[in-house]
Length: 363
Ligand SMILES: [Zn+2]
Image 1 (cartoon, rainbow, N blue to C red):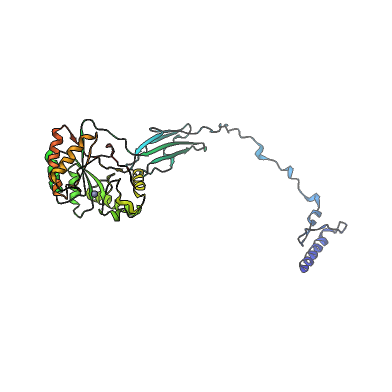
Image 2 (cartoon, rainbow, N blue to C red):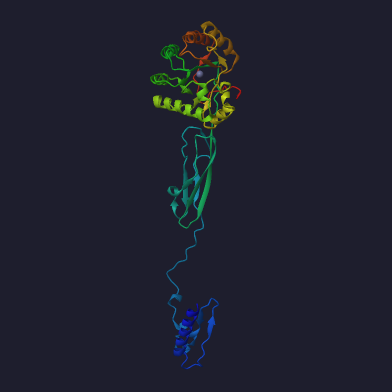
């Protein structure tokens, strides 16, 4: 430090020698406080040699005669949404942007410049906001929003006396015969299918015009209801298999054992959680209000009597039966159809819009 200060002092001294020939020999030296020394020696230069800066003529002062004043563009573009500002889309179906038009008073059609931000997840019911933004060349910005409601479809209530036949646990050895029987009477039904290697039967069910819904890939309660994740793994497997075989992206589900089952108690609360979740995901789960009780009895006459006795009690009877892999149950189908037709019923397949029949959740 001492060495540096000495060097500065020497430098100041040299400057002084040149500048102080006409002065009094004293040059102000300031201590900057950081240990270095600075000098205002340059102030000692001859002031008469400095040219007059104010003497320079200013050419820029000349006004532009050709410049017509343009009023500033303060008008933002008009952005108009096509369709409603609140739009409903049925879950698990495609949402198509209804469109928009943007026009600016100076820049013309700006529709192509409209930026849309936000996301609509059709696989989860809820309210989504899309934001549309457009700006003109002057930077005036217009923003507007559209609310997209992703929701379950509206229920459509059929008129007259109807019966929904639903067949679980197939396909099986009686699927072919069952399809032929339904065809004989011109009746459409609903098949909640399980996993199978014979996916040709899925295709036949679909091509015959029946509704295909997902039951489960593996009809094993301990596996399917082991955990929430296990259930959805099974559900996705059967949905994929149906889709690969038929091209159908079904949204209809029937839980193994129904939504009121207690066999899922191995995983407490699972039915409460997964029934809510599948509904939010846009699926429709259907239980039943008429049971053939073909898991309880093997007597065809009893199965038929169960269906005939219970059906008239309901406005929208959804009949549960397992005729594809139980011959004694299959044998009851034709008589039940004949009874239904003779009593003025129309047999309908379930759709996502069908009246929902769901049980009270017990787990
Ligand atoms: Zn089943």
